[in-house]
Length: 358
Ligand SMILES: *Cc1c(COP(=O)(O)O)cnc(C)c1O
Image (cartoon, rainbow, N blue to C red):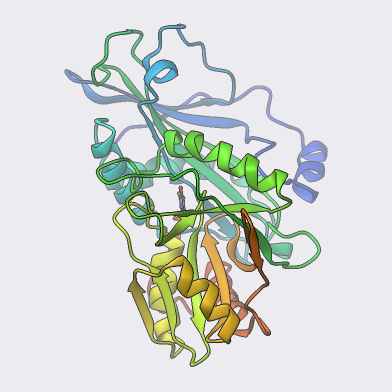
């Protein structure tokens, strides 16, 4: 794929960049450029270019604004100690986007083109990839949307793929602390045959009211149950879950309606290598409650690209509450450190997960 580059004439100066990278937060600052590729049924994917970062001009009838035909990805570029820049399993993000696009009736962007697009933007904006100290990284957001201006209901005939990037600080400032969870029994995030397994904005839109409820209950995040029976653990709004049992084995919920995280999949392999038996199976909310009460469940954690691995603390629901399971969080931290060490190049990349960009 040919990608042309129109360089920004208003790139952020070094002093300002240093200020931003010292304290980037999350999703607040964007790099100097963005990547864009257009699609039409006749021309296929075409006109790939990197251009100065800036606002889009959209017709008010642009289909995505009305019918939410949209998918996205979330990944990171990590700077290693020697200055090189790497991404983590980018082909997995690319392949997942193909699956999400299929569900949203969007065209597939080939895996190598996706990876090339991400690499190209990160290369152009490489000075925005922070130093590894304090677990900083460059968060990368590829996304695709129905850009045709048309109010009829059908898959769009003009689609735009974009990549933007934003420096990210450590998810946990001042140390890792458990997230408290609100169990919503009113809302679900996905139903049978729905979009639960696709990474699409609509799933996030539907999770916001439950997240609002969580916040008003003093909790950090919301946990969803399955839409059919309302008893199996699914996931958080944007993170998958793991339960560590007192004998060291680990369970992660199995479901057709969760978004299967690349972090989740990587932990299945990594934890196995670390000597833990890993099971993907259904787990009920009662097993959670009883397991914490009896001590059978020793630790609980959630995982995703942004936070990597975060310990789960207390669980609250309408009319009840259970405390955190973790005694020490030992296994959680063992897995977290093992993963982060691979991502930052501090330990051997046993699985060939890292992809060099610069
Ligand atoms: C992106 C996402 C995750 C985590 O996936 P990773 O690939 O590990 O970042 C989990 N749940 C939902 C709903 C998501 O959108």
